[in-house]
Length: 494
Image 1: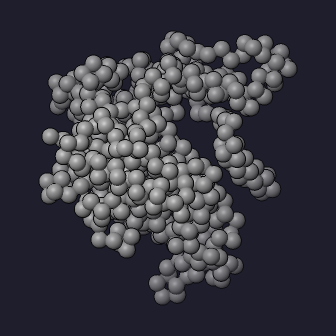
Image 2 (image 1 turned 30 degrees about the horizontal axis):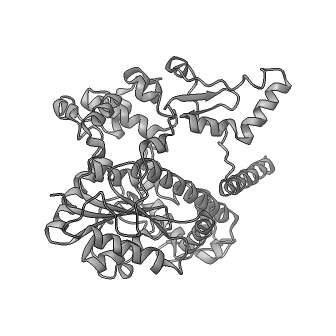
């Protein structure tokens, strides 16, 4: 009999931790953290960890358990989380999985591609273990990750954008560890039905929030984090655990806690802090140097007035928005199309939390905990929001398309069509037509065949894809404003 598990997911800032604690108190549960950054010690403010007071006596697992130098991947997390969930359930309590690292959530619910496959079990132990940190040792010098994957598994390569390094390197790792192609393993999972058979008798609670309500909430969240001491926390962490030291001085392959929001966004501000601290009399009161210990202290309210701090806040807000978009996309494409019921709850209004989120979530959990619960039925008035794979894919073929005009690549016909309709692409078409480079209607022929796709340059994206969505347009304007200010400042400094 499968263990019963509640899963709380949603974009950053929607109240996942709050709901998890409320449900744990109501149903005698314990929270299992599924946020990759919150597993590390330190950076409590930047990673938005719940405080002891907010926990209100609810036990949390896999929170602040890793040292900054440790590295976990999805398999390490799975191996640590599964025994925790089993222990909680064996004590008669309800495991509540809460977090925004949805790749981790997915692997717990359905298992990872290679580890659960019959092909993997037949080849396990055949080769020395390869992990993301040493994949480079197996790729010939001068060959890009995508080109190497295209050599060993062309079918998988054509479904990945050349800049999607995590997926590409994971596919390479699967091949090196198992001797089997990732594309073949995916077919094997589909044939055996493994990909839709969940480990648990689970219900997923998806906290949705209208963008017009979420963006101002994220802006306030960023400012609140600053006032609560995030700058000091991140600055001290930088000094104790330099990123350059962690990456061998290259700054590349940043992983672990160094991916946390706040590290890169405030680097220029921290440089300004160091410059002021080096002066015998700092020219700004935002920096204080302890005469006895030499510790550099940052005054949050005064730091907010510094231009580099303001730029850092804008970058952090943009990163939050980008990340929420990825989270929502993952939920739509990976969770809603699988064999676990997903219920969407409207978390747009803070004042309506009780009626829109807490009460329906409580009903769904009570339904799950019934002895005769079956996954094919839902509580009255609270239907699931799952969709079929056909609805999700919209019959699009996972093929790489390349636009020579804009210097970008997309994967899938839907993304390609979105690029063709973008303003930046239309401007490029007009420019090309004006100089007679090519007929406007012929300059965007897609490279739909594998052969033509492999011959196209895999250089990084040069232009952003646009959207007609008002929120995305507003976001793009904000990005362009920051970049314009940086260009102007750079020009003035020459």
